[in-house]
Image (cartoon, rainbow, N blue to C red; front, side, top):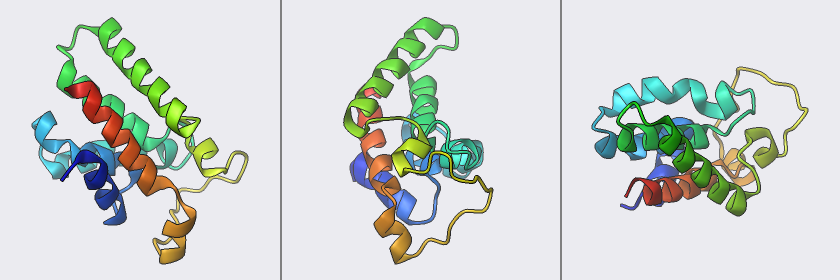
Amino acid sequence: MDKYSLAIENFKSGLNCAQAVAVAFAKEMDLDEEEIKKLSIGFGGGFARQRLICGAVSAMAMVISKVKSNGNDKMEIYRLIQSACDEIKGELGSIICGELLGEVGKPITHVPEERTKEYYKKRPCAEICGIVARITEQYIK
């Protein structure tokens, strides 16, 4: 299954946006899926549902860093991540969760919404996860 579809499936299975993208790259990161879920859970909802940087984008940064970095190459990794963010902005218009969801200025809570059919109809999150995963895949090749 391609990373686009896998990230969408991961999100629809109940993972948050960061987990959905990060878990799609478990093999490439040579990490166990359960560990990835733990490492990425706090980035969901724009950093713990604060609607800041999209969790899928945060996961993209984690994946690129893990796969492409030697641990001492900040400038190159920053360049890759900034370039990937520019692509995401070009496709989605933003990398800010609140802007992507049209929720800028709305009250923030740590309690996620229930995942119902209506939730998936009004939320672009699954598609965003797929797009970010597709772009991430391009950057780690």
